[in-house]
Each structure stands twice: as C-alpha cells, then as structure tokens.
Image 1 (spheres, one colour):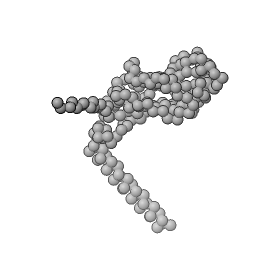
Image 2: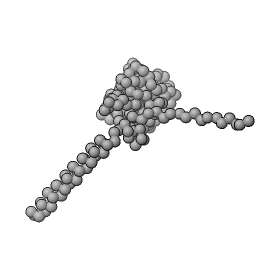
Image 3: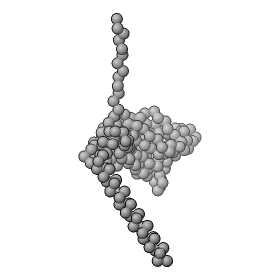
Image 4: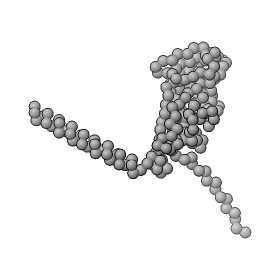
Length: 205
C-alpha cells in the first residue's frame, strides 16, 4: 500500500517537473519569436478568432417579423411573406494586441433557414460607421453550418466590427423560419497580398 502511494507521488512529481519545463520552454520560444514575426513568415494565419452567439442578434425592422424566439441554442425568427429585413451582429473586436493593430481576415456565419423561400441575400461588414466589405446577391438558404467570407485587402480595424445580414422572405407557401446560431470574425496580423502585374515582353525589332 505504501509502495503504491510512493509510486503515485513520484509520478506526480515527475509530471509537475516535466510540465514546468514545458511551460518554461514555451515562454522562451515565445520570447524569441514574436507573433508578428510569425505572421509575416506565414506561420500564423489567424491571430484571433471572435464569435458571438446568435441569440444576441438585433432585428432592424421588428414589425416585419411574424414571430421571434430567443433560446439558449439560437434565435428563431419567422419573417412575414414578401418582406425583407436586416439582422445585425456586433462582434467583440480586438483592435490592438501587444501594440499591434489587427486586420479583419474573414467573417463567418452559422445559420439555417426553413426553405429556399427564406434566404440570406447580402452580408455587409462595418468597422464603426465605415463599410469595409459588401457581399451581395448571395441567396444562401437551408443548412449553412459554416459560411466563411474572406474580406478583400484584410482591412485594419479601428473601432469595432459589425456584420449586417440582409434577408428576404418570399411569398410561396413555404417555411419562412430562420435560425441564427452564431457569427464571428477571424483577425490576422498578415498584410494583404500584393498583386504583381506581369510585364508584357516587347519583341525586339
């Protein structure tokens, strides 16, 4: 019995020792190579990912909604036939980390609709009052477990990221429910890729 207890204590001491060595090694490695340097070298693509739950969604025109239910797993809305609307998400935004300003890399959505007659038409992205991206005429419907929309030029963040979702509800005798589960954004330190214009060779005379 005592022998078994001694073995357990020794094993725990060894584990703590190895764990401490691992932590110190990790700290030393991080001190040697900064996150920004890693991002510039292409080792880190996403520096920070931020999501917000669907039941925090704001509805721009509540009078066009037939029913609304905010549950633990999603917000469920039913649009009135023949209407459109805008749904808004405010994404928690890490504008600066360690004195480095982050860039918005892509926005993400997770949602479902009851039929093809209830659809996400447009997705607009804002930094404060400035629109930094617009994805129009998407017409996404039914199961959309993970929609990722890369932002052109990876704009620098200044104020706070908002996602505005333009939706539509048709007039067909179909299900006009939508369930929004989550929305988010990937932030990065990577500079936007430079476009290289090929030089046209002029034939020698």
